Length: 376
Image 1 (cartoon, rainbow, N blue to C red):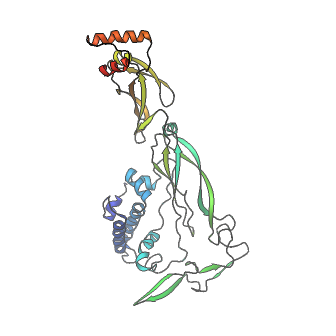
Image 2 (spheres, rainbow, N blue to C red):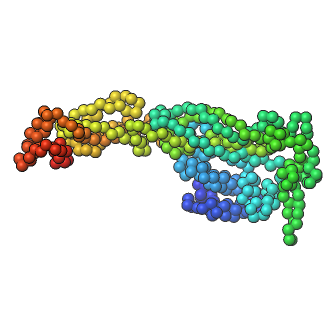
Image 3 (cartoon, rainbow, N blue to C red):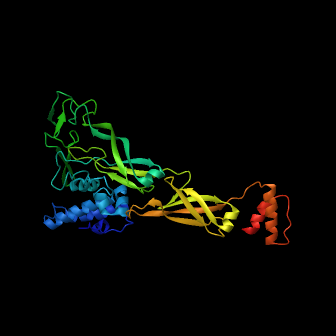
């Protein structure tokens, strides 16, 4: 079944600002939150609005959704990428409402939630390919740095041989309570971070966090016909989260290097080719190579002018949206004007000029350029 329109789910248009988006989400979240509306329909709607907000509030995910739809966000968009899923909707809800209530919502209206899982951060990495690689597709190995499980403490955050103890501030509850005017509020304990326990001796390598920066290497497959600026998602390629919250995603932005000979225009390739004036007038054939260095024959029409274009269908770039379809190669004909001519060529050109205009008087300087000025 097709996904609902995320914009329609939140009741906003595609040009919505970040502030308007948050306001729309906040209004609907208050209406359908399970603690305020216990019906099964409300819970299902709450999940939908959180899914929509999770995508539209992230510029990278929003771009993928706008270009390719919900399946590209949820299923990786291209072959070889798997969905990492969304973080818990309580995390999203708490992050939006924390600025209103000073952090009093710790995983819902029911109070602070101990050891709440948090998904890791998403990361972005640039990938540069040649035009030939963009044509054929390429499987490449990339290396980057991300936050991962600490190798020294294996994620516990504690030095070897040490243990944890009950947090003296919150007495192990993970929350502290305070009054503000007529309100009594609870928030995660600032000393233990809501965990209820603290480390006797924190790991020196990660300073007790259980996470550290590490180099990560993985293989990615870019599809044939990939375009400049395309963004692909690698599920679980980002930073690791906390309390088994899982990894974030890695977003790859593709940069295609400029080619020395060919220019790209969508799925078409543009090639400039030089021809002589007789070839332009009389027509003929020239040999060229395509992007894969295969020899092709180009038929030059009679009476071609400078800048005329000959199109060769199927010799362009693969089209991602259409299986086994390719664009065209557009060969732009440039008439070559030699700077020097032999005495015989000069003689012939003077004779040719006379056939076009009986009043033409041959001159010694700039004859060839003037002749072409008349003819073109």
